[in-house]
Length: 363
Image 1 (cartoon, rainbow, N blue to C red):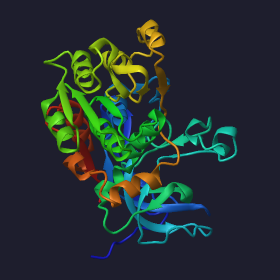
Image 2: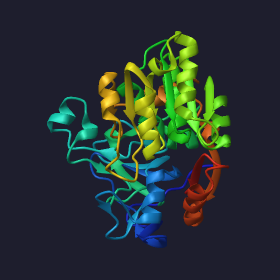
Image 3: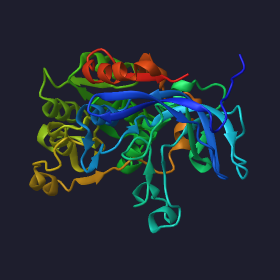
């Protein structure tokens, strides 16, 4: 069936967050793409933890919902129109959107770390509108065509996979490495697969939900640990001790990833890295000030590496999916139509024991 498009200036439906747990559907004008912009008819949007947090708490750190705006930044769609200087894509192309664009001129942009650009514009971060709407106009250099073999659901999840790809780059995972991922949600399971694709051979997934650990095992985890039933740190040390022959207190993984965003998983991530190992902090705990055992980390010469989104990861992430090295389909567990976006956000927040990635079907 041929896709029909609205024209710039026509009205479209948008799910607008006005305050905590207050989403209202509004009619807005379809945006007109600028000379270097692409107008995309949004098809699929993944529900992210940040969307949930804005919906339930009205803020994340210094980013506060002070005026109505649209959530959703993990998106895919079909090109409806292009600006006069766009040559990368054409109407009818299926695409995924990298949700943050930058100045392209500052030191960080010019040295390849554009995720650190002070002037980044990021979807669904107040006051920038996101993709829980019918159409989005976006810069063409942050719009990526996808092959026919990729589903629109997979295309929407290129965003969280890019987080995982960048985490693995930050951790410098090498062939034969051992890794532990504290948090087996969508980001954790994507990081697990990205680490496997980079050559890691011991892949330990830690979570408190058996359902998520089952998915992690399906996606390649060699060991799973239920932290609700077992001392996760002791279990990681025992697993690696049996491989290296070192005593448990001198054992650990080459690279540990924190992907759950809790205080305890931050502590465990630092402690789980072997002497000389690396700890990558991917998730964001609700408390900015976290008490950590820095003395032990320093004594073991642990490299503690932060992460802020990603840079230059979309092409690599798309390639991993196309070549079958990462399975994103298994992460998608539930779909909701745009008209039920509030139910989608609440469901994703309240059903971690039986869901993984919730997708909003805009079209």
